Image (cartoon, rainbow, N blue to C red; front, top):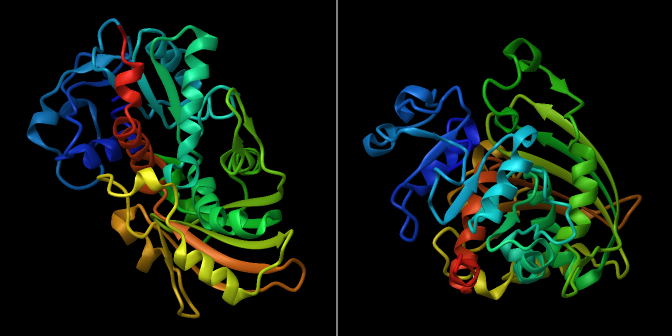
Length: 347
C-alpha cells in the first residue's frame, strides 16, 4: 500500500482488513514517515486500527524495498507518476488512484461494471513500455458516479450531451482537507482540475476498446464542480441528451435491468445490484444512501423529463469507497478473476 498514511490510504487499509483474496503485508509512504511504525506515522481517522497493521514498519516507496506483487497506490499526483512507473517496470501490478496515468492511451481507466473489457489494454501497455508489470487506474471520484449512472443509458440510447453539476463531499479533499471556516454553512464553487477530469475521463470510460487504444465516446459535457458541507457522498445532478431519447419509464426499465460487465458478478467487493434506483421524490441523499452496497453501489433517482435536453436525474455514491479505495480493490479482484494478475507477474 503506497501512500498508506493518507485518508485514501487508510480507506484501503480498512477495506482490505479480512479481505478473502488479499493480505496487506507492506505499507509505504513519504520519507518523513519511513522507518516509523504505521501506528505512529498515521493520524488514524476512522474506526479501529488493527494491531498487526499498526505494528508494520512504514517503508519508502521504492520497488527494491517494497516486494509485494500487487501494489495499491494512494499517492498524491505530485509524486505518483515516477513512483508508479518504477513499480510497473519492476514487474508489479499497480492499482492507481492518482490522475497521472488515467488518460494515457495505453493505460486502462476502469470501473469494472462499466468497462471491465478495457483491462485487455494491458497487453499493449506491456509491449509498448517494456514493463513486465503494469498500471491500471480507477476513475476520478465524481466521474465514477456519473459513468455508472450513464453507462446503461448510453448503451441503450447513446448519450450525446451532458450538463452536470456536482455536490462533492469534504472527504474528497483528503485530510486535513478544507478548513472548517471555509466550508461550514457554505458552498465552494471550485475544485481544482475537477471539471476537466470529468469532461475527459467520462468519454474514455464510456469508449470502445480497440486493441491498442480506446476510441472515446462522442459525448459533449459541461461540468460544474462544487464542494459542499457533506462528510461522505458525491451527488450529481444531470441533464442528458440522447441520440434516441427515451421516456423516463424506458430509462428506468434500463437502469433496473442493468447488470454491467458479466465477469464482475460475484467478486468480493462487487455490490449487487451496482445501481439502486430510488423511487421516492426526495432520494437519493448522501446521508441515507451513501453506504448502499457497502458504499460500492450508486443510487439513482428523480428520473424525469428535462425542459432543455431529454432527461434529468440525480445520482450519489460514497466517494472514498466506490470513488477511490473500493473501486481500485474491485479492479484488482477483476484482474485476479480473469487471470491477468498471473499473466502479468514477472518471469
